[in-house]
Structure formats: C-alpha cells, structure tokens
Image (tube, rainbow, N blue to C red; front, side, top):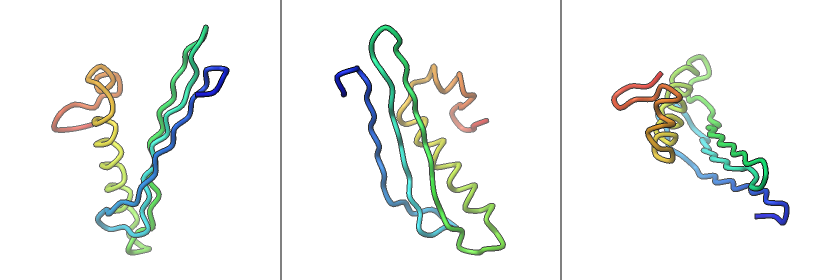
Length: 90
C-alpha cells in the first residue's frame, strides 16, 4: 500500500485451456482507502486459438475461466449482483 492509501496487486499465471495456446490469466485488484474508498477488480485471459479459423472455442474457454475465477474470489452478494449463479452464469 502506498502512503496515500492506494493499492494495486497483479497476479499472472500460465493457463491450459482447451482450443488455445500461449494462454495467460491475469487478476488485478486495485483501489484506494481513505475518505473515498474504491476498489477495482479486473480478470483477463489472453490466448491464441489453436485453429485460426475457430477462435470461438478459445473465447468460450477463456470466459469459463473468468467466471470460475470470479466466483472463487468473490462472495455470493457479488455473484447475485453480476447474475452468476451455481450451475450457470449470465
């Protein structure tokens, strides 16, 4: 945390996803404490599709990873806010 109350944490890791190669997952948490408290959460996957003419499979796998990661690091109130429920997601 910095002196002015700002914080930023970035977590990156290599992933294995179906239909994709050279995959990186990134979770970023940032914000500020003080008079105005704000928090930002960013989940991102970068992937190269295995087949250049079929990127949708890599996109679907990346989306599934992001939803699963979101559910793992947030509580049920956030799941309800974003329409993510057990067994399915919006």
